[in-house]
Length: 295
Image (cartoon, rainbow, N blue to C red; front, top):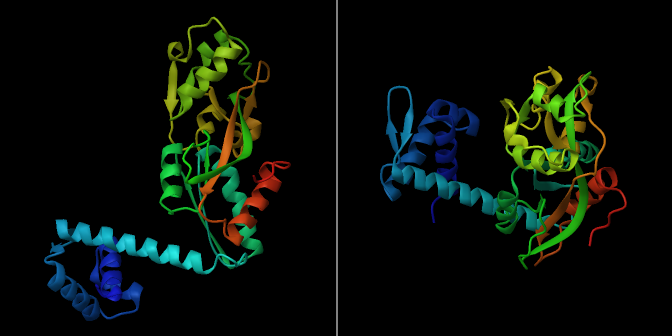
């Protein structure tokens, strides 16, 4: 088995690209870091190409770095297993779609402030990545928009998230002509969301692809900024709209039959949630989806 200290030195060196900074971060001498790398290269072959201003990993170096990450993840999973009964200490790992994630992350930070022994690790991701991350134990909790049918996953209703038509403040957005004049601000799920909502609001019109495109952003937290500046309209989930700081600069166009996404909380079915994860779920349900109980 490879020495964990050698692997740690190599992992940090690969990240920082400097023997000096690696030694400073690890509290070692530069000579000690160099010795660790020499030991690893004695076992695995050349790992680094040393250039005047940078380090480059060899194929063996990339393989070693991937192994380092696997060891770190295994260590993290072991630590989680050993602290499952402790609701005040340890990591809360949650992966979710971006829109509701904007609301969830802030609530989790409030929970962490109340219990400083907790550490929040949150990631925005689409459904496919959420499922993979929970199945492979990289995150204990996940949220998806479609209930999975994999027997390895337990799923319970978490919240409903309506889609909203958002225009600049002072604009109407109540007719198709209004939307044609404004133009569409797109995002990764924008075409699909807009099609679902606008087909109900404006039946008989040609669809979102026939409206002028005024912009695109894959950053959910910034998506409403061009709308607030009068550059177009968008269709976005309510939680993402509520997280926007400048509510006075935008307007939600009411009316029509609502279009609602259902969000499902998932975790591995083979073992119960850790105490801290269950505490986090209870905290989030009370603030995001009151009245919905974990199944």
